Image 1: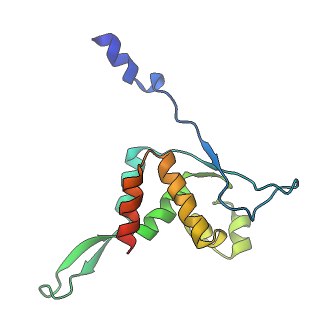
Image 2 (image 1 turned 45 degrees about the vertical axis):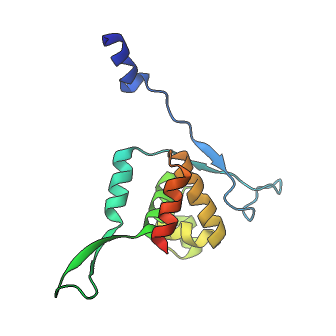
Length: 144
């Protein structure tokens, strides 16, 4: 029994490898070929913190005076998880942010990519993090 438990020790867990993904055909290297972005996986605890930061309190229409309900900002979550999981390019690089006139990695991701590219990229980020098609559908539904 103790032998099986050792498989769960941090040093024995199989590491999740970063994945490469061409987020846009518009960013090309000297050879003219699109440059792949590098995506990493985060922990469930990190994901929970990002989700928590995407919750907001809104007044309930037709509810009691001052009644509020928590709502989830799916667009903010997509930008935050996308930015957090992007290893390359470095979205926190000041020169890169300045070139687009933004001051955060989340904003940078939103202006670097066209809407379709953004959706495809964040779907890939969720996939790298182990989410299935069902969760991506739920995020899309929450946005509508």
